[in-house]
Each structure stands twice: as structure tokens, then as C-alpha cells.
Image (cartoon, rainbow, N blue to C red; front, side, top):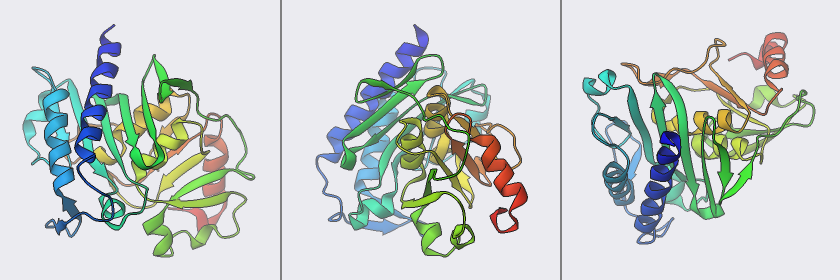
Length: 263
């Protein structure tokens, strides 16, 4: 019952976020640059506010891209990890590859999540032990054991920088896309076989996706082979893999045996 309440709160948070987004038009949104150079809009900040109203209850922690981080979260067993708009750059430029990403962490494990992709009309919500639903319908991650003809979602930015040229002769098909949360959500929804990132990502980028892929029967792991652990003092991963059920061994073999495939 407790996990179902978590899912209910996630669904409510995403619905509130959609209400906020109705006041904005992607591609026609004013923005400014944060200290690191990334764009931020009034939509990011407004969604952050409504999610903070809906999600955390007494005793639960909070980690968001749009909220100043603090050490208090490290003492919390339950932590909400959110990115109000993952893919703000795409949102600003009108590329329909952005989403609202909500993850719940317990004991450093991502256990529940929700990703709303308004431009695709998709809401993906699920939890470990409860499965995953897309727009209310149950789904599973794909199941395959070979990378041959697999569809791998790649970072549009990484592809643009030439970082995926190493995979030009790979046996899988590459589809560029913005927002790592979007990509992980589509793997969980059974709409792609795998995704991985070649650059560091923050916990808020991947918490929801990690929970969803695992809840849907897929696998998520770090470049060193370990399972991702969240709510750490430095909330960042040096890379991450997410894949359909049964595909991990083939991916690891490809990276092990193909020099150009190594991270």
C-alpha cells in the first residue's frame, strides 16, 4: 500500500507539472543562463515549486536541479530526486525531447519514478514491485540477448560532438535524442532497446529512469559494473547504461572486445 501511495503522489506531481506547462510554449520561452552555462526558464522554477509542494512529506529529503543542495538530505532514508525539466535546451529551442522527471530513492536505491513527456503525449509511472504503466496501460521493457539490430538511443549532444562516431560500424542502430530521462523512460516503456551516456550525469537526471527501467524488467548499471547508488555527497555518475532484459551481457561484451567502444 505504501508504494502505491508513492505512485499516487508521483502521478499527482506530474499532473500539476502539466498544468504549469500549459502556460508555456516550447520554442517560445525566455531563458537565462545558470552559472554553469545551462539554460533555465520560468517553467523549470514553477514546476520545481509545485513538485516540492506535492511530493515530500515530513521526514523525507529533497534533491532537485533547481534547488540549492544541502547535507540534510544525506540523513534521510527516503529522498525525492527530481529534474523539473530534463532537456531544458530542447524545451527552449522547440525540439520535442524534454520531460518532467521524478524519482524516489530509499536507502540509496531508486525505487519509484515518473516521467512525463508532453510532446509525445506519454506519462510513464512505476515502482519496484508494482510494474510500469504508460498512460495507465501496463508495459514491460523489451527482452533480447543480442545487440544485432538493437535500437540504441544516444544523446543528441554527444552525437553532435562526434562522441558516437566510434560506433559507426556497430551492429546496432543509433537514434539521437535529447534528455537522458526521456531516453531511459522509453527503454522502460519498451519503445527502445538500450541507452547509455558517455559523459557524467547528475542523480536528478537518472533517478526516475533507473527506477522505471528496473520496475519494467530491464537493467541499469554503471560503467564499472556496479548498481547505481543514490543520495551520495557528490550526486553524480560518471556514466550509466540502461537496457532491455537480457541485453546487458551483449553490451558488456561489445565494450570489452571493441577498443573503440570503450568509455
